[in-house]
Length: 135
Image 1 (cartoon, rainbow, N blue to C red):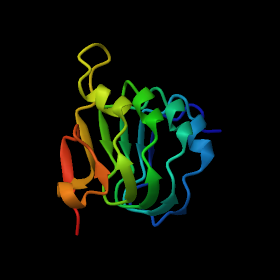
Image 2: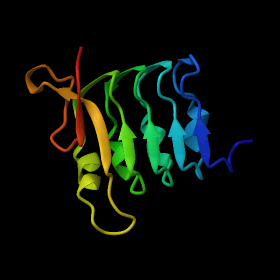
Image 3: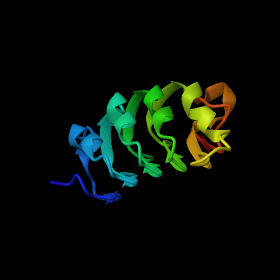
Image 4: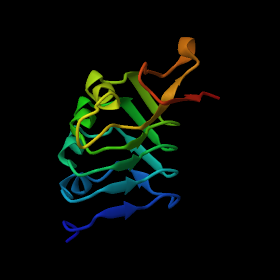
C-alpha cells in the first residue's frame, strides 16, 4: 500500500511498541522520522533494505541493543540521529565509513549518538558528528 511513499514522518505521536517490519519494505523511502515517541526494542537488521534513505531520525525513543551494521549499507544517508535511546556498544565501522565517503552519493554528514562523556558513554562512537550529553 505504501510502497511508493517517499517521506514517512510520525514524530511526536506517542507511538509505542517496536518499529513495524513493514517499514523496512518501503524501498523508495527517502526520509523516515520516528523521533520523540515511545518506540522500543532493537533496530532491525532489515533497516539495510532502505537503500534510498537520506534522512533517519530515531532519537528520543526507548530503542535498545546494538546499532546494526546494516545501517552502513545506506550509502545515500546524510542524517542519522540515534541519541536519547538505550542503544549500546560500538558504532559499526560500516556506518563510520560513510562519514568519510567522498565519492557519490556523498557522505553521512550528521551522525548523533549517546557517546558523551567518553567514560560513561552508552555508544562508543569515534566518528559521530555530535555526542549527546547523557543525563
